[in-house]
Length: 59
Image (cartoon, rainbow, N blue to C red; front, side, top):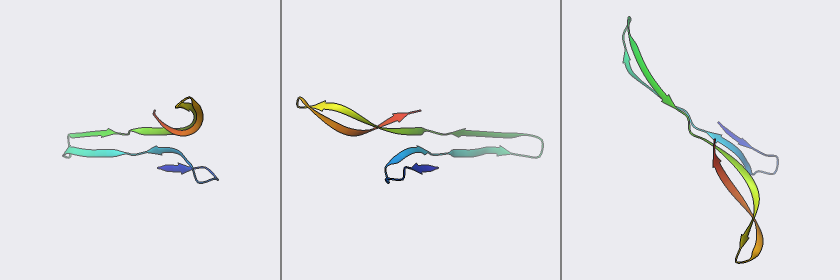
């Protein structure tokens, strides 16, 4: 899932991963993960000067 703002800058990315290890009629074993990233624009000091930077945060 990817979300973007009206100005084209990314808001968040969520990637899903799922895997079926065992899928039998009486027993199933599945695993999954979903790393998510949120993007924020922050003002950071670079060489002593303020600069707006797009920063990715894990959620």
